Amino acid sequence: MKNNSYAGNKLYSGISALACRGSVPHGILIECENEDEGYEFARFIAGCLLCTGSDKPCGECPACRKFYKNGHPDVIVTDGIRGKSSSFTVDAVREIRSSAFVVPNESDKKIYILKNGGNMNEQAQNAILKILEEPPEYVYFIIITPSKSTVLETVLSRVCVYSLNTESAGVSEKEKEAVKALVMAILSVSELKLLEETAAYQKNSQFAETVLELLSEIFRDALVKKSGYNGNFRFEDEVNAVCSALTSKSIMNCAEVCGELIASIQRKCNNNLLITRMCYEFKRAIGR
Image 1 (cartoon, rainbow, N blue to C red):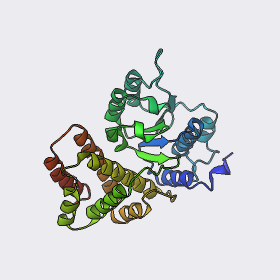
Image 2 (image 1 turned 180 degrees about the horizontal axis):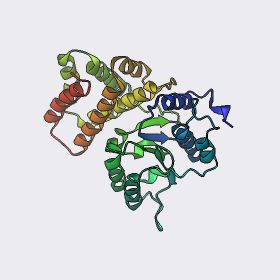
Image 3 (image 1 turned 60 degrees about the vertical axis):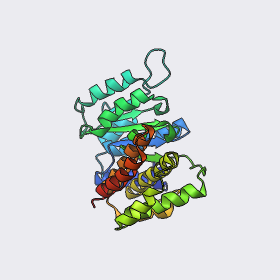
Image 4 (image 1 turned 135 degrees about the vertical axis):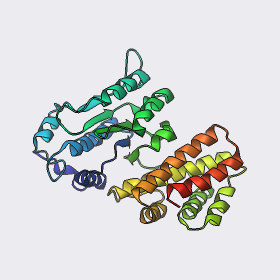
């Protein structure tokens, strides 16, 4: 039978609504300090994806019954540990990439639940990034990690983040004001305004990186809100503004731009070129 305990949870309800519309993202990252809670949410998402009923997950259809008895062949759960290693190894990721191109057995979807995502090193994350960028149309990845801070920005830009943690408040007023101003500049029709805001980072790449990380959070939260989740966000007004002004595709493009720009800063790129690129890339991302 269907578990009705999720009915009042907006995060769960949002995923259910997405599944009913056939719009669940192919890459999802669950941020949760409690491993069992994170895994429970991951299973809920998988159940929604597999369900053939109208109210997902119905708990009644053959796919649901098989899944909730832990017997569905198209759901692969792994912690990525190989041999004596306690980390999610790159060899495990390579195995996943290889098997992902094998079509599902029974469903029209194949779902990978990757536990232990917080212990995925940079090499393993870069390996998973390759298939997150262009997954087979039937494949879905659900990665569970205690904190998204352990995840590369390039990976974060390819997934929709659902956080079950309480967001920490460790952001200065200067950083808050800067990211709010940058959001408004990106959404404005004024190229001059965008140039003015980005020019402020010309001599301070560390500050630019911090602001871009916060901006990335806003775009990821906007994607979550677009999916139907109406909970609280750290930058509530900015998330609402982004949702009102941009399509889901444009928001995803902007999140990807944030990841690329942060990677450029970490490679110590020229600051003048960075500012020029910020203006160009955000305009391109929103189709201007």
